[in-house]
Image 1 (cartoon, rainbow, N blue to C red):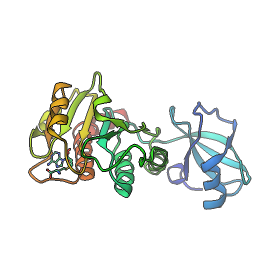
Image 2 (cartoon, rainbow, N blue to C red; image 1 turned 120 degrees about the horizontal axis):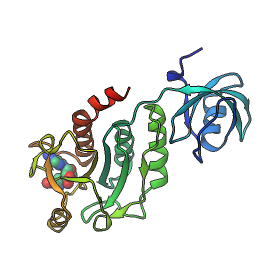
Image 3 (cartoon, rainbow, N blue to C red; image 1 turned 180 degrees about the horizontal axis):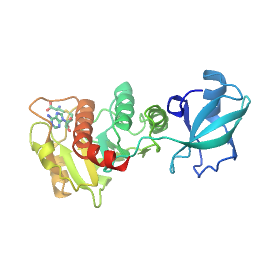
Length: 249
Ligand code: SAH
């Protein structure tokens, strides 16, 4: 039998703790994936995630067209969550670039994504697909073995967001101090702001400064917005999350 780390993983709707021995019903997208896409059968094992407390290895006891049943066997491993909570506030990008951004941000350990509507952004609230982004986030979290699916809220105009209590860093092209120099060991709650394809307007930049966001630079080149978001996230995670994650293992 495969080790549970390589078994297919599924987040179930309506999270709650699973008890060993309990039989859990699997419906919707997860059931479709189990029965139709992966063609799993009774007796095969999967990992079920409740979205909060962790993962459980389970044995399929029934696989039907609309519902599968699985018996919970034991706890299964999950990647520990980063010790720092990073909210990515990034301008909504067009089409596949936004999908890619969401997928990679989840892999890199983002805690929450707030899609921003900005003055120079090409995306509008009507064209936004938050349901699609949430599905991509769930699949990315399953793939990279996270225990939680990062929250993705509906797009919000920049001037309506807030980041109470968090240290806010606004990626602002070549201005600003180098991002690594703005990070401190004790940081636990970070808001990373990234502008749209066309960049921030002056009005937006002064609004950000008035809200206390500090300008951060990722180097002398102008990066595409999705590159900037992912470079910023990787920088933060590599500075702050590794040693603490190792300790928690
Ligand atoms: N159109 C703008 C570039 C926008 S890049 C211009 O030509 O000047 C899109 C977003 O990526 C920016 O708003 C910023 O948030 C981020 N970004 C790009 N390069 C960056 C860098 N070197 N450092 C920090 N942020 C950067």
